Each structure stands twice: as structure tokens, then as C-alpha cells.
Amino acid sequence: MEKIFSNDVSKYKQGSVSARIEAFFLNNIGKVVTRDQLARVAADPIDGSPRENWHQRLSELRTDKGYTILTNRDTPMLSPGEYLMPDTNRRPLAARRVIPTDTCWRLILQNAQNRCQWVEDGHACRLESGHKDPIGGGTVKLTADHMTPHSLDPSSDPDDPKKWQALCGRHQVMKKNFWDSSTGKFNLEAIIQAAGHKEKRKVYDSLKSYFDDK
Image (cartoon, rainbow, N blue to C red; front, side, top):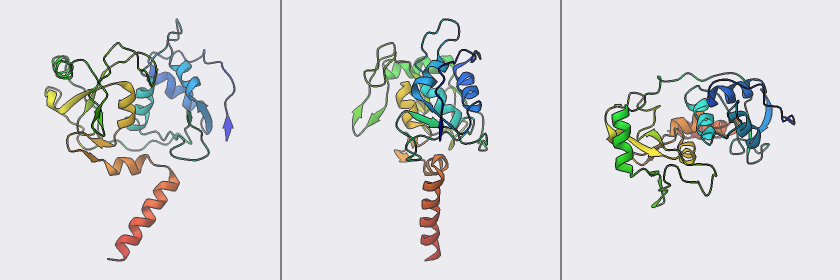
């Protein structure tokens, strides 16, 4: 696979982090791009200041726009911190993502005590907004997350704080669309949809064998 060695990202001046990253991938279809390159593309095009939420914007290109963006979890040909968009095809999406109202978001933050509410194996993240993320780096910015994944319930009530939680950017990316926080169950359809071709084939062959035996 071809890798990009150029450090020139000055031409990406789109008005949002998401638009800059999308343009960068579309200009480099089939090429391996790195975490460092994406961080520099995401940076403010005027003063070069970093944008720590670029991981979340990258995740939204997959979940909200339907692009396939591979990582080392999808193919052994990629190393950690490398990404590849194999083509411009986009999966059909269920519906436009909704966001909580300003009043609802204030209640969410109040309930969360302005800290990330991610819990894994009984351990809470609890990173506070504005503080430094000791693992992912950058400044913690909390954003609203659907308790039930968007793909399962695209019309979450924007006025009901019980339908939402506050997550830091790192855990928004980790959760993606794969975990239903309201039930504690995996969103298996979304996981399979996001998997690479090889993994999809394994799941297909396994299910075909299972149902053919019934």
C-alpha cells in the first residue's frame, strides 16, 4: 500500500475539522495516512492551533457519513496510528443525527458533574472538561452521546437528559456506534458493518454454517 510522505497540509482550509479530514482522505484514496498527518490537517488553518476533537470527527465520517476508514483492527497491513480509505463508497444511513437542546445539554453536564461518564469493567473515566487527557493527550472536551446508538434510535429525544451522556472525545471514538449504554449490550449490526472484508466473510461463513445446520 502506498504511503503519503508529504508534510504539506496547507491546502486544507475548509471551515470545519470534519470537512478538512474528509477532503484529505478523498484526495488520498487507497493511500495510508497517519495519525500525525490527520492531526495537522485538523489543526486551525489560520493559526495552526491543534484540534483535539479530530478523533471524534474521524469517527463521524464512518458513522454519520458512511465512509469506510480502515485501521490496524481491520487489516494487518496497517500499523497502529495508520488509516486508509479504500474507496469513496458510502453506506446508506438511517437518519440525520440529532443533538440535545442547549437546556438539555446543561442538565447532562450537571448530572455528569462536568466529567466523562464512560464506564468500562467497573472503572469510570471521570476526566473533567478542560483538563488534559493523560492517555490521549490534548484538552478534554465533553460531547453528547446517545445512550442508545444512533443506528438503533436515530430520533433520541433532544429534551430528555436521560437519553444522553457526556463523553470525552477519546471515549466517543471508542464507543462509536457499537455499544448501547442503556442496555449494556453490543450493537452487533454496527460492529459487523464497520468490520473489514475479511472479518465480514468470517461472520458470514459462520452464520451460514449455523443456519444451514438448522
